[in-house]
Image (cartoon, rainbow over all chains, first blue to last red; front, top):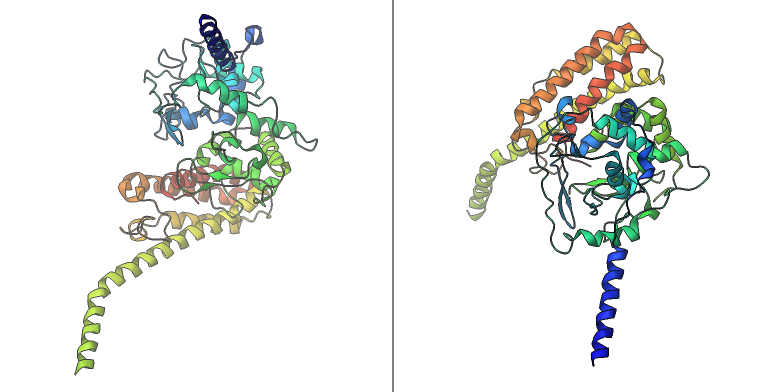
Length: 293
Length: 154
């Protein structure tokens, strides 16, 4: 009897230990960022391409407001409501962080407290970023105004409020490379679309656990904000030329001079600040991905 | 006798309903009118955008005409084009979000931004192809920013 009890306890212990091991966070090695020196000017372009202000900037429209990264935007999902945090360089934001902690957040989805972030923060895409670009972005963000606004906690029901469970989600969905690996895929465009600008987060549909369905990459999806849908931008639906796409990302004008609406307006606010060759690279990539019908 | 009574009842019903019908028709007319105004903006932007992109050869006269049309549309009074009761909640073929009426001052101010941007385009339209792209920037921003807040997504 005593032996049986011991065996049960031992098995339970193994299960718990195994669960903890499987769901653990996986931060970068400290030496990964130790020698990096960020360039704020280059970081400004990463900031624009990533559209950080779209979710973290203060709503109100003015250019100054956009750069106060107080967060607070609600992101509705099937799992509950997420509120974007303050990421300004203040005590209420990420002012006390090191570059190493920032990089862990960006490319591993791990907080300085060693917890998993929810993938509403698109670290799945950012995991493909060059660490030098992360360092540049970090340097730029130090130059932005401080905000004392406290981050609002997410509003999630059980079991989604248990962050530990995200370890399993990450095992299933954290990528170990690019979505598109064909030889004809332009590299710079792929880097911008799949990593920094995280286009797939809205333009690709998700499965029941919120993971991107990569076989339908950029093939359109329901609009998370409820109304309408996010369009399919593969050659299966979008017949614009590469020049048309690049001009749209610069000016917001479609080929027939209608304009973008919804969140895409914010995206274009960012892409309009990029060098022309980066917009062309995005356009070339979008033309090269397989058609989703 | 019966037929006359029926006829007069029908007539009375028609008269009683007619104010409603008139409102609905006015609403349709307003929607068509504002969409027409947007189409003139699109036509004008097409001319100038084509020149800015280098797809169409620059022509000072055509650019000026298009820019002036754009500015003329942007100076229209919004009130008659957006009467109450013509939001996307009220009418199936409307894409104007209820926010238009809830935040009318903001809506008007965005339209004024377009007016200012259009005037900027008129100023440079005859000066050569080089300046067109830069002058289109604020127009794109004005269009996008207003559509973001006030137009229903596709």
